[in-house]
Image (cartoon, rainbow, N blue to C red; front, side, top):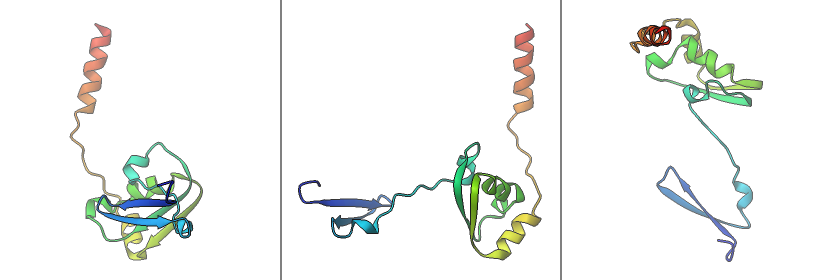
Length: 112
């Protein structure tokens, strides 16, 4: 609202908070995304929360992916026991995507 010099921020699509020009410095632009969505991207600094989660998410592969997204610094915040669990959990789940079959099929189509 330029006329009244106010900004309304909606948190979690539920709660609205109005800020006037005197307290706009309380706001800071920030971005967050899941580790899965960050694959293939790089960021200067990555902050990773380490907390209780579903066992299938507490894996070495996931923490490796998260850490390797950072180009300058990584900040781990949370419970160190869960980080240890992630590092020790080298299990991978079998995926049933039919990717190998799809690739073979594509190769056969190309060969004609």
